[in-house]
Image 1 (cartoon, one colour):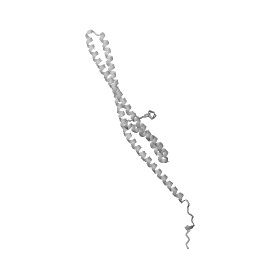
Image 2 (cartoon, helix red, strand yellow):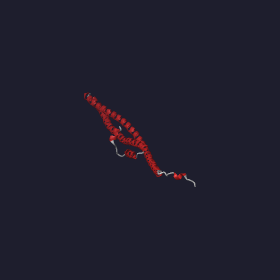
Image 3 (cartoon, rainbow, N blue to C red):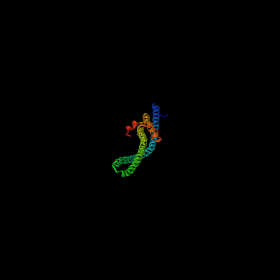
Image 4 (tube, rainbow, N blue to C red):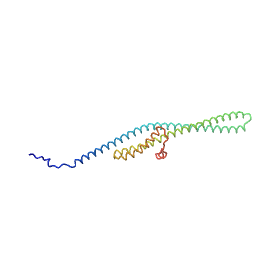
Length: 212
C-alpha cells in the first residue's frame, strides 16, 4: 500500500482570504483606472476648450491694439483741430481790435479777414467736436474688448488651477480632490463661454486681483 505524503499536509485556511484580497486589489485597480480615465478625459476637454478660448482671446487682443492705436491718433488729431480753432478765434479777436484803430478805407479788408477766420474757427470747432466723439468711440470699443479679454484671463486662471488639481488627483487617487477641481472648472468654463458668446458675466474683484 502506497502512502500519499500530501495526505498528512494540513489544508491552508488562508486560501479564501487570498481570493478576497485578490478581488479587493482588483477592484481597487479598476477604480484607480476609472479615476485616471476620468481625469484624462476632463483634462483633454479642458485643454481643447482653453485652446479655443486662446484663439479668440488673441484676436481680441489684436483688436484692442488696433483700437488703442486709432484712439491715440484720433485724440492727437482732436488736439490739432482744437488748437486750430483757438488760433482762429484769437486771430478774429486781434483783427477786430486792429480794425478799430485802422483807417476807414481799410476796414472793409479787415472785415473780409475777420469773416474768413470766423469761418475757419467755426469749421475747426465743428470738426474737433466730431473728432472728439470719434476718439471717445474708440475708447469705448477698447473698453468693450478689454471686458471680454478679462473674461478669458479669468477663465485661463481658473482652468489652470483645475488642471493642476486634476494632476494631484491622478497622483494621490483622491476622489474628493477631483470634486474640488470641478469648482474652478465650472467657473473657468463659465468665464470662457462668456467671452466666446459675449455674455455680461464679469468679476471686477478677480480682475483687480489678477491685475487686469
